[in-house]
Amino acid sequence: MQRVIVSDGGVSVVAAEVPQPGPGEVLVRTAVAGVCGSDTHALAGLHPFIELPYAPGHEVCGTVEAVGPAVTAAVVGQRVTLEPFLPCWECKQCLAGRQNICERLRFFGCAHDQGGMAELFTVDQRRLHVIPDALDWATAAFIEPLGTPVHAIGLAEGVRDKAVAILGAGTIGILMAQVARAYGAKRIVMTARSAASRERALAFGADAAVDATAPDAVALVREALGESADVVFDCVAEQSTTDQALALVMKGGTVVVVGVPPADVSIPLPLVQDAQLRIQGSATYLPGDFTEAMRLLESGQVDVSAMVTAVHPLADAAAAFADAASGRHLKVLLSA
Image 1: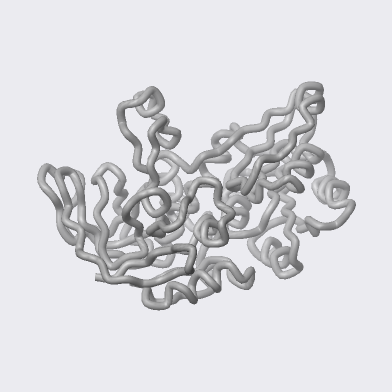
Image 2 (image 1 turned 135 degrees about the vertical axis):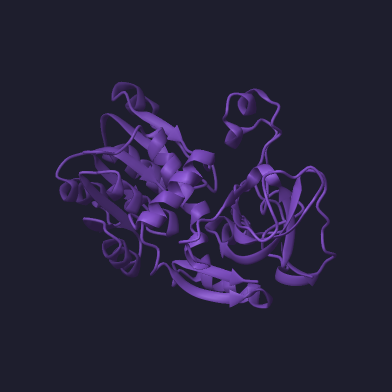
């Protein structure tokens, strides 16, 4: 079989043996795998938690090809997607139902010996979710990334009737805007560096879009909101957006860090204390977030029909990564 490897030398497709499912594991034949921003950041050496070389592909959907011994949660022929984080199931966090912050966490497609950018892969049956029949493969490819904003909004204690700012208009930012709209946000303003990204933000439902590089970006966002932000979702998570987020949020408000920060940032702690601000990290998702993501897609409350802007066969993985890193595309998929 073929699988993708990302190394210092770039993106390559190599021959590999077909993995065999062990006890409790399932063999899945990949249908589609999304190229995530974390994948392109890792290739560029900008991801703090992914070391090269690695086997990419955590936004993946496919069909159960075979099952190992003691598998009870999957049958051959099922269409499935997966929660890619691989918890230990035994630590304090896992036992409390917070497997996404397991103390010994591994991550399929990021920090694991397998990824979904392969013709076949094996995974623990406990990581699988059955895809509803109503969702085609391209739509199902968004279940995993959509779980991220669902989880983040839950950590923010909801957005109903709140003024929401979203920093960044990539895939997660656009999905965040759609979920916030579905959950009753009063007004949504997004920031983005490029004019094309700002146009995209408006097309996908933002009430306004502001140039993130403008010297008066904070004032412009507040003007577009008509007030300070109740909640800011930082989908970029670098120094400039951290500064903007803390300046945008109201006293007693919340900043949710959704993007993976490429490096440490400085925080104006006196402001955080005096304004009683909450800085909330958001790490991936939990099973209920996947269930909710599927509901939002099935109901049409989140519409991803125009979000796939390029599809490449597995053999052209390097071209898919190049497209994803170019800034010209919203979501790039690999088709196995």
